[in-house]
Length: 80
Ligand SMILES: [Zn+2]
Image (cartoon, helix red, strand yellow):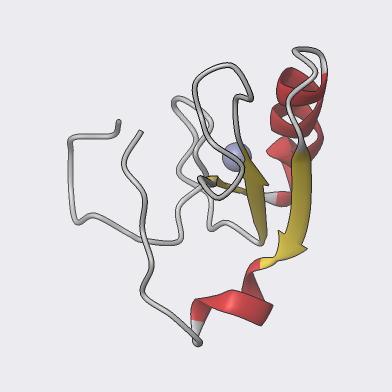
């Protein structure tokens, strides 16, 4: 987690990246998460592919959505 400065709910989840996220990556680990448990990462344009591939390589179910679709609708956050 990024511990410096103001927390920005729309900051890219990639370590060290402080870009504004434009993608919302929803995923879960089938081995430890039930089907209704969804984790969320946020990603900027540059890291959306990296993070999605990172999860896909582990055979985790991944869904990528534009942040715009969900940001205003709910304040839902999940902790890593
Ligand atoms: Zn990024």
